[in-house]
Image: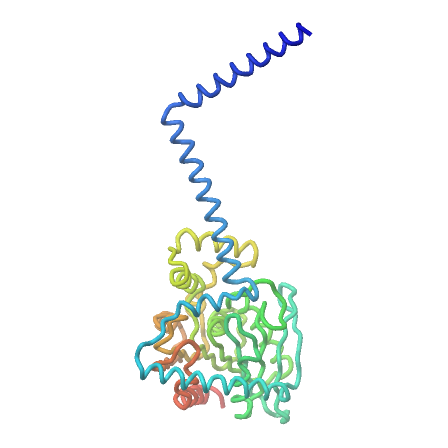
Length: 359
């Protein structure tokens, strides 16, 4: 027992001596080494925070049904001008009525719900509204906006259909009945649009097609127009309130909602998007696509749009390489509200532009 106790005391003494020496070395560590350790830990924490915030931003921005629209709408300014308030209220009431009428009309007018496989093997859903006259070769493709679904734009389908057009309204990826975890923000959708156009041409080799897109759908139209296999059967493109690029769009929302700079957050968001969604934020840009466009295009934007800022209109209009182009600015119109703010001006401009290039 005495030997064991002596052994334990020796061990404890040795352990205390080691601890004392370790503590001594920690406290006598040079200030330079201590500073390096602190800075390293700070950089590591900053890097981890950046990754967390960037992944969160990407999930909020492009994950299916993330509810990000609610956060965006809270940042939009409310006009203090009584005349503008009255204009917006009148437009809102018209919008509500026409959307409701469009949904009811579409339920009975839809002639076919069709499933088409994307290039990356997603099932895409589209709704056909075909005229009873088989000799009718006029086709309108209506593309909905960000976090919307096709049926919410059936009021536009109704307008075209009643003018004698066949209409297709697809759910864009990760929307409605179309598969997908992440929204394509127009960039992935540009390839899906090409497939839908080819499907129309397969059904009707004599088809004369116009594409009318809204917000994200408008940007998808612009992005698709620069593809090398964009069909010549498309006679007119109409973009209503599109953004110039996904980068500038997210940069705007990052500033408005979180008051954060784009660098380095969007750079990391772009990497996460590339890994998870299959495309980088940087490459999803309308400008280089429009520089290759050969199809007549009508550009529409409300000058009171602060969702997709009004300045973006000139960016995309000036980038467009096709000389057959026109710009419509609707005074006092908020985001995708031009057709409800000035319906007569809106549709007279649309029909006039289409009439120049479609017999």
